[in-house]
Image 1 (cartoon, helix red, strand yellow):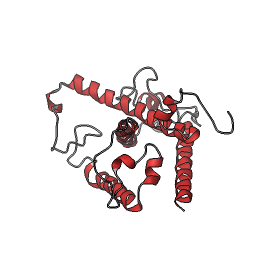
Image 2: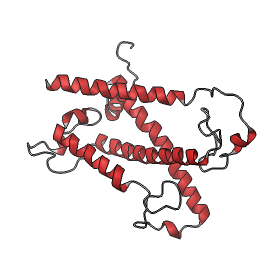
Image 3: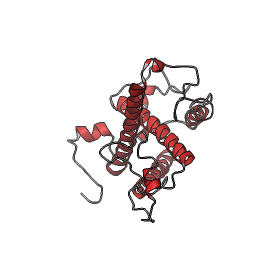
Image 4: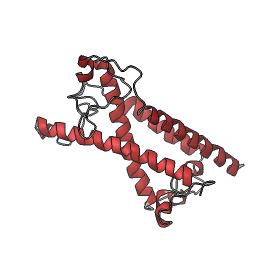
Length: 222
């Protein structure tokens, strides 16, 4: 029964990733309308994130109408997902390196070191552990990771509580650091997606793939 549950869970995870890939591929599809006003095209060309090598990149025309509130919402989502992806990449690499918390993860005596890496970690957790995990994520989403006091810029979650010296930077340095975060978040979203897809296709985690010589193996094809 445990093996069947794990199989069902892994199948659902693979379907979720496939759906995300299809959604990502749609981002590179040509826009349906080829006629756009010059004003709409240039509305956000000077915004943060419009930089080499792509410059201003909106193939689906999501903000072609120049709607500032719509752009701000999409930028908020991009920054938030980028931050989550950066944490995911770091967590993935740390667990792949064999780093684990000390002690047990539940009262039955399962230690953190018993939890494998990759998707197998999800199926190794009890329903109670998963409930706590998603509950904590939900708490952060609803009460913590949000702009409550009206931040300096989109994605500013300091809320007059924590600063880390941000206010000591000049405006050019602030803009540079925000651009770095945006680019790193974009790279992390691609990186963690690639790692997850690679594991689903090959059935290997990153370390297993490297230890095996890095050969590409697609079951049923090679």
